[in-house]
Image (cartoon, rainbow, N blue to C red; front, side, top):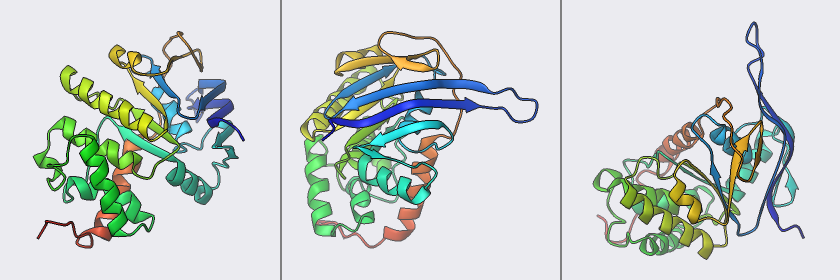
Length: 265
C-alpha cells in the first residue's frame, strides 16, 4: 500500500492564451509528493503561485494537464462528481479568511461538515466539543463569530477543517491576518492537532516562523516546486475561499434551526 497521500505527476498549468493574450506557463511538468503524517511548509513570495498550487492539489482547479493521485486513487478532475466526493472525503481547507457562518455558534460552524455527510447530531456534537476543548475554546463554543477574536475564529476554522479527519489538510496563509503572538498560538494549535490526528498537511505562507514548525520546507521556482529554491511567477485563478463561502451559504439554509446544542435555548 502506498505511503503517499498526494502525488502530482507532470502537472502543467497555463494562464491566458485567449485572443491576443499570450499564454503564461505557471507550472511545467511539475512533480510533487507528500507522505502520510508529513507536514510541508510552502514558502514563496506573494504572487509566486502558492494558491494556484493549492487549488490544483485540493481539486479546486481542473484546468491543467498531468496526473493527480489522492490516497492512491487517480482522480479524473474532468469528472465533477468524482472530484467532489474525493475532495470532501480526503481534503480539508484552512484559509486566511475563515468564512465562518455568522448565524452559527463556534460549535455549529465546527460540526456542519459532519452533518452534511449524514453523521448524527449526537456524534457530531461530541466530536465538535472535543476539538474545541482541545484548542482552548471549551467555554466559547456557544459564541458566534462576532463574539470571538481573530485567533479564536481561526481555531474554529481549523477544527471545522479537520473534523472529518481528512487525509490531507491544505492551509493557505492561515495566519495572514493575525499578529505575531496570535500567529504563534494558532500555529502551535494547528501543528499539534495535525500530528494528533495523523493528518498530512501543506501550509503555504510567507511567515518564516512557520518554517521551524514543519517537517520539510519547499519553494516554487521556474514552474516547479522543490526545496530551497525561489523565483517569482504569476498567480491567477479562482480563489478557493469563494468555493468555501458558497458552500457555507448553502449549508446555512439547510441547517439553520435544525441543530440543537445542549445548553442553548
